[in-house]
Amino acid sequence: MPQELTEEELAQREFFVGLQKGEILKRIFRPDFDEAAREMCLQCTGEMCNSLFLPYGNLDTDVDIDTFMQNLMDAFPGSRKLERKGDVIHYDFYPEVKGECMCPMIALGHLEPTPLWCTCGNYFNKAMFEKVVKHPVQVELLESPLTRGSDLCRRLIHLKPPTITTGGE
Image 1 (cartoon, helix red, strand yellow):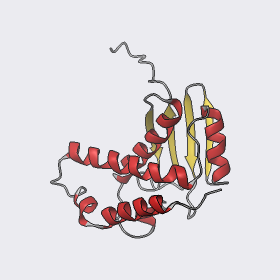
Image 2 (cartoon, one colour):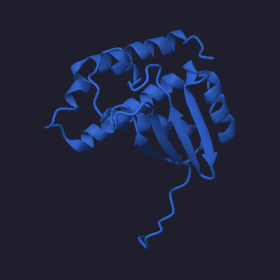
Image 3 (cartoon, rainbow, N blue to C red):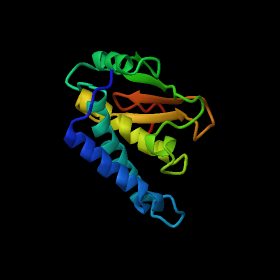
């Protein structure tokens, strides 16, 4: 079950929320904003959000991947389904309100919903799973309320780089 945040974690969360409520993150979605800079901003946002989520969920990343997956599902019963098939984790996240984005900044009305926020979610998950497996992973978004109007967010977490089967390098 989620735990109470420490004073330091609460201060970090408030600082982070303040940044997101401000014009900084609203600006990155304007058409004239540099795409590479947007990507870096969304990476930082996803990583920062994950750094607050792990202690909130009382999730230990110093465990094997299967234990972590079970702990994540147990910490938030009914909202996440994770299934590992070899080196790929199939990760379904079920929002509290079917078909709505559950990013706290969007759900609380601080930011406008846009499919670009799903990039932040990819980095959130990338940071989380890399802390567990201790090496780079790839995250692939298959669907979400913001990208396809679906009822859930569905991602694949590739624990090892996919094998190239087309003869490429």
